[in-house]
Each structure stands twice: as structure tokens, then as C-alpha cells.
Image (tube, rainbow, N blue to C red; front, side, top):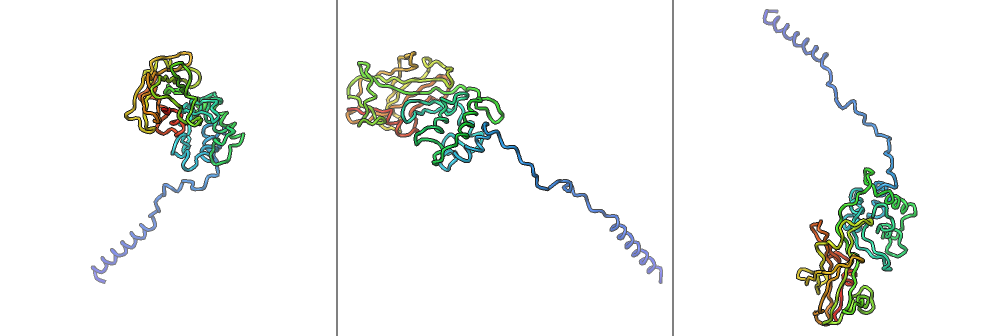
Length: 308
């Protein structure tokens, strides 16, 4: 073997030795995720208190009231989440009258006040207007859970009792009178109690409307200090853009009512005149309006008169 062959042979042996040593000492890198426990946890979260808003949402609102086309965000109250349920129930204004016209409701739920909470009326009414509207009434225990939540102050998701906000004022009703002071809005077209009431063309008429700015018996603003107290008239029940505006000028504190005077009913005979009432306590950007554009038609016809 010549010298060149010896050198190549030694080099080849060195390379094999180095490769063998490298293979022997190379260790597999550590996987940082090996220490994670991927096994399925058998821990079950505790169910929410059935008397809490979370419990009401899980057991009632989301599964029994959140029907397609109803409380799924289509209209309020919105039962899609716990948060939306709470936000659209507590101290939320409504203008609701029982079918027998014996009681008016101003709020969906009033903390510590089951009797004046519209939600309870809808759940317990003996009429066909009960909720849920799928034909299956809530059980007595379900209704008790709702009452218990209200009676505990309507606490939020963190258990904090609701605090009364400065809500917009409410319009709770009206009455119309002739020049002699006789109430005339009870005389309805075709004797239907939700039809327009009858007014003779060219005659005097006054309209009084009752207002409140309260949720639990404590008035936030004296209605006598309201900055807006108006009646708007239109022959189109859904369009008040060019309406005639009449400002109420007399406040009757005993009834929390404002009076507006119409010296002469000057619409043509055979005309149905719709009216909306607007008030503001001076603390809100938008006026309270009733009936509203989205109010049921029977409110719009109830707040109207027919010129004869």
C-alpha cells in the first residue's frame, strides 16, 4: 500500500468513527407539549342558582322563551344571552294594559316588586296572552324562580342588585272632554272599545294625558316640570312627519296629568285622526312617544278619533 492509499484509508476510518460517534450521541429533542394532560376532564361545572339571572336564562329564557321569530333578537326582551336577557328586562319601559283593561304596566321587571312587573303578568295571566307563546305554560316552580329573582332585587350576573337608572318618563293613559267637561273618549265607533272615539266636527275638545317618571314609587322628575308635553295629530297612523302639534298648557298635579286644548275640531267629516303623545323630563335626548311607530295597531286606533 502506497502512502496515498494509507492516507485515504486513515481518512475513511476517521469519517466512519466520527459518524458512528455522532449517531450514538444525538438525542431526540424534548417535546414541550409532552407534559400536557390531554385526558378528558370529568369535572362538571356547578349548575347556576335557579333563582339567579344565569339560572333563569339556562332553565327558562333560552330554552322555553327563545323561540324563532320571538325573543331571538327579533324584538325585546332579547333572550339570546344572559346579558341581553338582563338588559332588556330590568327597569325596561313598556306601555302595557291587561286585556280586561284593569291594570296598566310601565316596566317589564321592577326589582322587589312582583305585582307591578309586566313579566310576571305575562307568565301568570289566565288569558290566552300568557308566555311562552308555544302553548306550554311554565311550571309553578319556574314562575317561583322568576319571582324569587325579582324579590331579591333583580341581581345581575355578579349578584349585584339592580340600581334604578334615570329612565325616560312614561305615558300611562289619556282622556278626552267636550266643552262641558264630559268625557267623550268612551263613545267608540261601532261600540268597539279599541276603535276611534267619536267627535263632532267644529266642536271644542280637550285631551288630558297622564304621565309618570317613576319605577318603584319614587319620582325622578315632577311631571309638572317636563320640558316637552305635546300631542301630535295626523290622518296617517304611521306617518307623523307633517303632523299638527298641540302643546299642553295646564298641569293637574292631583292626577299627574297635562291638558291640551283644541278650540275646534276642523278635520273633515268622515276623517279618522290619529294622535301621539310626546313628553320629556329634560334629562333625555329623545322624547318619550306613545303610541310609537312599532306599537300594535290597536293602540294606534285607541289613540284616535273619528270626525262625525
